[in-house]
Image (cartoon, rainbow, N blue to C red; front, side, top):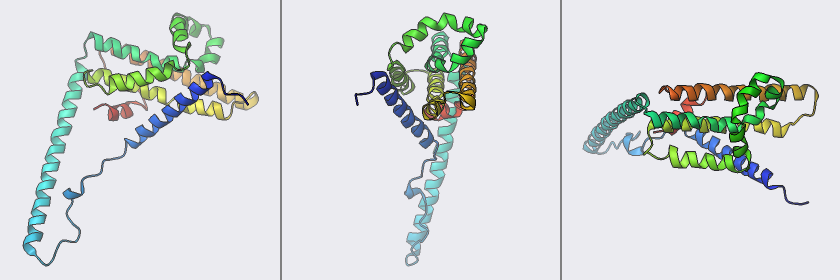
Length: 240
């Protein structure tokens, strides 16, 4: 048998990278373990009372210091993030608004049933057709945009937290597209009830992406902080 076409291989690589990204997001939700030196020994030495008392006092001091450092760090991060979110300037708003087109362009194919059946959606999508064609012209474009946004912007502290948070929301939203993609690859019905379910799923995903695009972009242009359902908490954990 011959080699699979390049578009299929690119899609498989992009799918695999999104799977690894989803696994990273899930793993980052687990709490960090404390260093063993901050915990008192469950079996203190009974032969030397002075050593036991000194160890207990040292552990108490370490607990107090750790608690103070944590409280100070949490207060600093929250106050800094709130200040950055509330004082976004013009360029930050524009960049944040544009980033929400990325998951929409990457998942616009899910609207094939809605767009063909309802004329208002055709009118709404028509101005975006040239940009969508450029985005879809090379199968690897979505993957390259993913890498650029994540490693060049989200992981770059030179950008404000407002920009990095919104871009991370767009990235997480794009990663979530892996689920309907996997369902279509697994079943791919040709007719009957299965096809009706796939059409309903695709239309729901498209409408969700469209709502996220309108809500996210308009909120950013107004200088507000859009918090998309499902993805906002994951984006918060990734942006420090």
